[in-house]
Amino acid sequence: MGLIYMNRVGLFFGSFDPPHIGHANVVMGVVNSKLVDKVLVIPAYQNIWKGRSTRFPYRYAMCCMAFDSLPNVFVSDIEKSMMNPDYDKGIPTYDVLMELSSRITDKELVIITTPETYREIPNWHNGSTILKDYKFIMVINGEEPPYGLPDNVSLVYVPTIRMCSTCIRNRVKDGVGIKPFVRDDVYEIIKQYKLYV
Image (cartoon, rainbow, N blue to C red; front, side, top):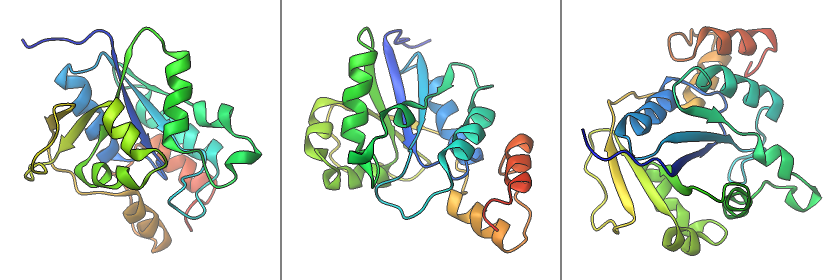
């Protein structure tokens, strides 16, 4: 067996609107890689890059249902605790990283990303600082990894599952089934509160 990193926490950011099997696939790929000893799933209170999202309490509850039963995976509501009028359009990832660093002082924080998201980081608030100061785990679905990645990026290969939250929202809107792409309890939340219709 390879090295097990017992002082590293993987951070998986996203809207999770809703969380689905593709997200679980990424998280478990990282957990199974042993590159971190646990993963924090961090739903955005309001995604800066997206328009209106489903209200945070629904997305947070669905994340707890989707991820809490996975080994060494935990859901954080840190963005809710940070929310204030200064963040009317959402909380920059850099600010969340600073807050997490002040709360988790005994472990190294590692950002979990995909090639697509990694390419967007230079456009984020303090994106160049994030790229320089943090380590990354990039999840690859069988495609070629980006050329010339720096030493602070580790690769993890996971099985390909082609699903996205937008696809699920569209399926609900169109009256098309969304199982098995979401867990049964997540499906019940979507149905009970008439999300995405």
